[in-house]
Length: 476
Image 1 (cartoon, one colour):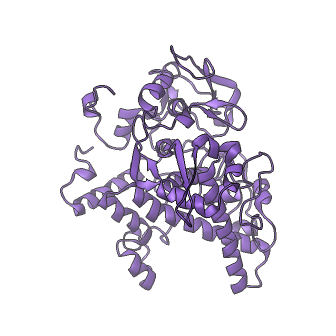
Image 2: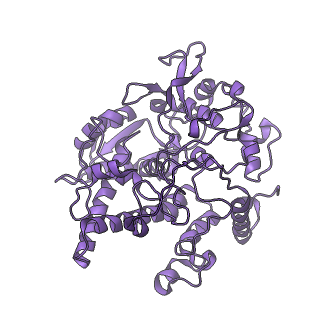
């Protein structure tokens, strides 16, 4: 482990070289698959459709390993088993609700300044493609007693336990069991199309490969939940993800129109399959070279993320000349041979942890007219999420929503900036949740390494005192 981190090197070229070496090290030393990560069912032979296109549940994406990355398979790990010990007796130490109140609660909105609220919505839109642990076990809850003067409406606060795979239990002092992903691990647009044949059938028209959009270019209402759009993933829904679901549903149908015009012999199923592949690739590209480069503004990371897609020779060279060889260095990962490195592909529990970016969401929203710039109204976050989503969206022009969100800064990811609305969030089913407390408990329950262990896992030096973490004595 080097005490010099990649960003501490004096020159850009040294920083890029150090980043490349770190990536190689992480690929070699930080990918782990538990033997229990897959269901025990034999999938048999793939259908002809599975050989040529993505399946609705993510099976057969790799024909040599048909369960890899499928819905119902477990999360992998970036930490070795020795670092995923669950300490059930210390689950509430230190008190997660106290941390939520004293360190995470927003005292005033702190804008990020470098990204807008579309970027905040984007990462939730992506997360809904990638992972969900399920709703938990209502018969097994974690009780969190409230302290004095705590205004949370339920004492104790209760959080449903995550359900391990294969009927296993979380055992104190032992490595965490494997937890299943209800969604596919792949970058396959499942938040739009749905995971599994039933959900996918709900959103499809079965005509010309298209998915359901009404005559005004908006999504239809959910078949199960009033106030939510009919789409592939409907949980934790709000206006920001709603406009993205609508946008890419319309993009899917536009791709179908273009394909049908160019290839009139293609049937509904083949048009759908090809449009799914096209839209999924578009989303992956946006995330890699646009969203991530907006979030991570360091010059070395800007170069690195673009090199992931285009290679060191750059976008112009790849567009005009194409790939040079099979390796990823010159021409990027896209189009290079598949390489899962030191473990079969899966998303990891640690990946889930670092993509919790709730401070990006403001509590207060201003809405403006694109045409005139006129201020139209103010809302709080509660009024544009959950069961209120469709009513709000249908009261506004779609263009005005995009314009307003493009102008508004997302929140900074820092202490004292967790949205108040998410610390007392009423879900569709009536449950009230403090997501800040929930975030902390989930990491502990699932054996995600705590701060210093997490640093060590990533080959970073451990901090020896609180002074090395922050000079702010009030926080310490």
